[in-house]
Length: 491
Image (cartoon, rainbow, N blue to C red; front, side):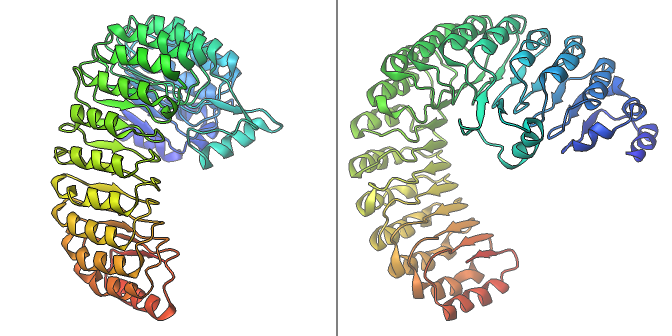
């Protein structure tokens, strides 16, 4: 801390990253002035405890900033009182373009101060995952919990959503001033249908919006319909994530009507809306009328082969990321996917984890064409009931994927024979850095894997947990790993 004042005398600090920012609370006012905030353009204080006096220091710095463009105070505790103190300082900034309030845990009253913050210059706004603990010791527990569980899920027994539909209505009032808004992240809150309706009205004026993330909000059918109406004027929308919004049949069909007009759409997330399969596929197909997706997330959504084949026909040539985890991909689905993969020359990421109905025949069908995916970087086939024959076919097919860096075959049934075929093929995977075959009974084939490790210079992580490897074979693996200084062996 003491060196900051001396450093500021030697140079002009334009970007200040104090992450984790826990010590910011102990910063004396003189040190805040030493930052010369007039020149600051970026201020990052993630993981800070923004209780007073930290909030007072931050407000002082922000008020003095003449060029501040980005403020990140994500993953902090920013209570109602702190928000009330900070908001006026932020409201005076005319240069602020990016504001990150992810996991700030401010309450209902704190959310009411948001509209005063939003200025015409604001381009990026992140308000994701604002949940707050409701039992005793809330403040201290929040600060510990956010560092350990920074994810988008919350246990309803211990949390209540604070950025709810009422907060969303207040938020929508402020968004009316942000005509230049390009990114809005509101995932993992509790906005619901009334909040979605208010947001939709505000977003109708944000014609430059390119990214909208409302995933993990229970919008329902009515909320989805309202949203579709509000986004019709957002011709630049490129990234839309509506995973787990409980849109229902009607909501997904209406969203399909919206997507017909989204010619700039590149990323579409519909994860977890799979109970309404026909409606979901209609929405994805509608996006293909004018747009060509690069990222498609249909995880946890059962895929009917006929509809899926039509969807892939629309987007196969442009897709780079395809997520079909837990999509109940049987052989018919695998055959439809295999047909599409022949045109997926740009595909980089394919996730088929936890498709236990895929089976050996499905993997064989994919293996026959996987070589056509010449740009493939990551392939996930964990828990897909892959047997020795399927593994051998896959090992052969992947020889054509010279860019492959990650292969996940954990929790399958490849057995010693499948592992032996895979081991012999490993030296052909010149770029492979991560291999996971944990949870497979490979037994003696561990020695074959050990024998080829020195011929796999790119390999960094090898996972062999729960593979029933005997002690002498384990010793062979450890001995071989010593000769590979970059390799981390996980047994």
